[in-house]
Length: 160
Image (cartoon, rainbow, N blue to C red; front, side, top):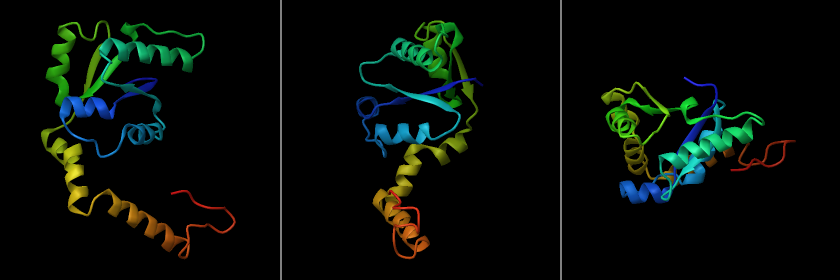
């Protein structure tokens, strides 16, 4: 759907203010996970003081830093959302909140959304002992692979 993918992450403060929930991972962890994806060009932030115009300007500014000498206009951008946000974002587009930015949607069935929602993942993690339980299992797996140590022969220490 695009040549350069810039992902905008809501900050913890924005999530708490708007959804009245604490995220499972903090802003930095979510951004790091996204940056690890090879298709993601860069990650930007949507905080409490930001509106859609600020997000668009941030993407344009970052694009300019990533592509020296090139520039973008809002009409060159496409904001991509899951289909579950289609009605809300189309209303925002009609009301002028997105300005010249195009809006597109990826398909997400209701059944799939129930399976992959953050609320479902959070519930599954809590039911199985919380995030520390997953970290303990990961540590144990590394210890088993490395003969009871987090050191790898000839390769120094593995950071966990």
